[in-house]
Image (cartoon, rainbow over all chains, first blue to last red; front, side):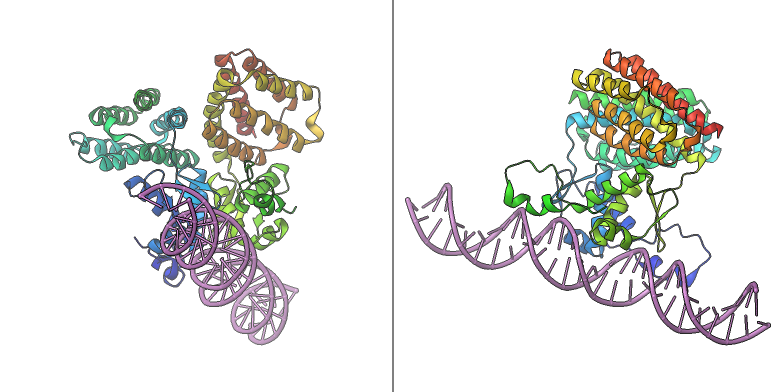
Length: 227
Length: 227
DNA sequence: ATTATTAATTTTGTATACAATATGTCTATT
DNA sequence: AATAGACATATTGTATACAAAATTAATAAT
């Protein structure tokens, strides 16, 4: 799991005029890598993040790792205990409920705006992505479900044309996903929710999309409350 | 504007058993200092943040400053332009509107929960804080108004007993405050809104508090749309 | 005088160094 | 064998070092 530096090193020589979508900044790469590890389940709640270890694994020094940790702390993915180090955040049930309360509002707004502002192509692509997995049984591969679920919600918020909303939701979704009890998830129910939401968005029915999304998130909230 | 290290350096020798509320971590101190400078108007949108300068001003090295910048970037207070440096974020009108859309939902939730979960003491204190400034004319001191407004909203979210909501709202409020056109604010209207919201919270009327807060934020939204 | 070119300076991004603290291991004592 | 104390090792938090890039200043050319 080593970061690819090539684009960073060579982009000035190669194509000066091209837009640098890459941030050319190791902090962001470390940050993204760690988020991905959390989503994949390679880093689990409570686990200590040894700076030197993480730096070596990613092929960088501790300096950008430290900055990335600070960034991750802002979105409740890691927690700093002074003089002890950084740990993957372990969320209490109460905090999970609080987070769902927030997600409920934000994702509803996102679904509404996605129906209103998303392009026809994005809407088509969203629907087809959900249809593609609608018959799949995720019970044997919870990580795959997490990735799909994350991508579904990420796309909708991206379609909302609100960059701040996008980044907020995607970070908090990672927290939710990495902290949930996978045994309790009703995968087929979840996917059929996704299907209904995608259809409402495709039909430009913003109010319905908002309502369905609100109910969808509430299902997750009820589930963790019942654990 | 130099950071006080004394507690950090001596706390192990002096009172080992006392709870270290200080994070013993310069990153957080730098982070807070910069947020405060933004709120005070000492740092204005678009301004470049020279690392060495900031470090010298706060009496630390560039390392904690860099981590603090990364943290601030997560809440849209600063923007990193690779190889160029960090700048106080300059928000477009569209982004301001998007941010208000988010704040509207989050603060409404906060007001509702504050009425539900805030203590009697907190409610009393909130109301008396607002009453104290209700006759004051802020038109000559917009920075004072900003600080008061920030504190009003901060307290409510703190009363909501949702730490994640608290940190999110307080950071986004700083962005809003530091990016607004002060000439356009109707101070007396704003304070009378605050008064009505405080009363609804004191009366444990969660639904009303939510509705009033929603309308209060919408006023701000309409104002920036009209500029 | 204005623009272009080159050189000097500043600033950034990252790595490394170093002191302070925390963790782990070993031995001694009961 | 279990516990406590002392020593060794590892890890953290911060400062400094250094190469690469950007900015500014100085010089030359039109």
